[in-house]
Length: 249
Image (cartoon, rainbow, N blue to C red; front, side, top):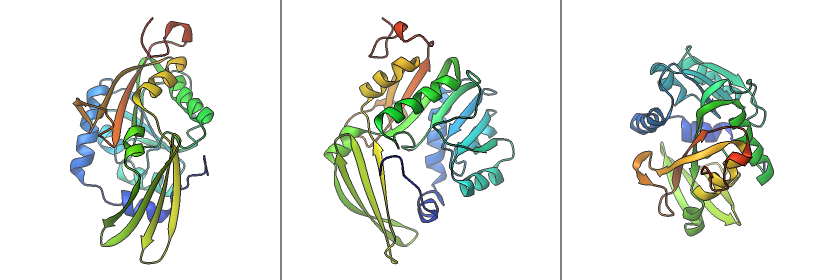
């Protein structure tokens, strides 16, 4: 199933239809602490219905949102006319080299594909970012999910969703069964540790400058936290200038 994740309209309505504004506010506050100053061009990659693009535009950023889901892009466009929204594949970002101040990729939107293709996606992000620009990835922490396989029930707006999580190597497989109705869908992602992201980013000219959890600069990513936010900085295009750990030699 790798590379074939397709989010149904049921998924979008259930998980992105209504999000607590306080959650979005916290996420955007974290982004703003690590993004270039307002007026910079920011690419919101896999932007969905624009829950981050809208407040970032309101804060003065020039936002371009990219997603494959046409309906979500329509919702995003209706929410803010100040941002630009484009239907495109994250593997082929339709932007010029070094034309963007920053890229954000939120809520495990990175890792859909096989390992080599995921590496290419990160290289695409690096390609469009200017020198000293920023890439921010919001990801599931692999070690957390390796320790927390299992099943649970999620209740949203009175509907019950049964979730089953299984790790296979470095890949997380999730099955969601919606009740009532019996509709089910499955997703799969490659998950990473902070060190693995740093090593993956280095050949693309990106240096890890921090790995955080809970959108809090004072909380380091760890196996006890489900999500992590990795902040990368573009330092050049020559891999010889960067060590495998993401640090200057």
